[in-house]
Length: 546
Image: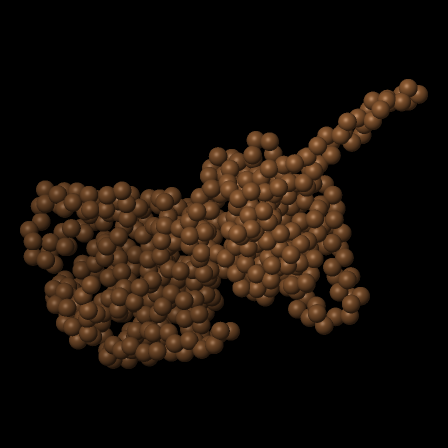
């Protein structure tokens, strides 16, 4: 890897690469300097009716360069002519520097009065303290700026104008970023979202599908590789690089590019999202497995719960506990059960998942609990009720990361804590790692694909499962949250389900007996019958998997 380029080296390289473009703009003007799809995009953005524009595109077709010309025209205008700040966001700092540099080139070509391009840091305060966000900007005599920002949603706080999100499918949290950007519309702002695809279940593609299906009224453009070629992409490359254009040379160049991308050509060049990236489980598959009627019980306690009188605390818990007892009473005593628990106390949910296993080894939802704002002692009481009531329980896996270890440890006191040296325990204390996810998420995915699992119908659970992403080849929960306000979720149900499925795969041996029927009574009409012919013994567990 080469050393990072200095500011001066970068400026010289970019100056050399854009001088030919500047000459072209000065000779033929902006309209003819832009290719058809670039000009069409800018014309759409210039129209007063376009407030939000989504563009799915091929990689490296120069659309960002076209965006730079629009950014300069918009920021250089007076306020009375529609001028405003332009904020550019991408997933990499180098992309942002390249965009700001392209804006500087357009400013020179248009002879716009612009001050020197610079870098700056501004502070961003949130609940976790003050952070510094690096940004780039060009200041115009109009009083407006072009600013290149990080993809953190908080970077848009306190700003107003045009927001351009480039390669949106690759930013860390597009959903939250869009929420922050769309607030600009209230004061006449504009939002542009442009990207190559990054998987069918990526938030960018979900937004595109909503537009195409009519559920969303945003403006939309589609520009694939062949459309860009037909509208002059390779001819422009030849013009700038001094090569001679011929149809045969273009055909060869096209074939070389497609070969270069290989299996990724459909997604990278022709706007066809693949199933190999983005969300780990496709939404339709998850919904197809939501066939259970098992209860989902929720308990949401007030923040001042521990300051309330004892009688008040009991009254707040009582309705949930009654529901829980009723649900536990309906569990099938002949089925095997396994439990998973993802612990949280402040920001996120605690989720408990009880799975039952039928004779075909199909896992089915038996009960789900969701606890928000519930103190540790109450959580342990609820979990203990479930473990004691669950028939033929073969395993219980607990999130033992951070404070979750306390619940796992206390349940281990009661039901046996399991580790390498003590394989007979019931409670597995799981400290999450990439290795754990690598080994234990694939079996869960196979259960979905083979119709070997049945879950309760729940929109939040669907969202949690769709949040799982393949990160460096391993299915994991990214550092992103869904939901609104103080009801945010962090894939909590997906983790609880993964833990329960893990526990359900533990090998076990059953020790039980069937008692002999009572001696017939010759005076009884029901001689020889027995209402309880089968008595369940204990289950002894052994380390291993099915």
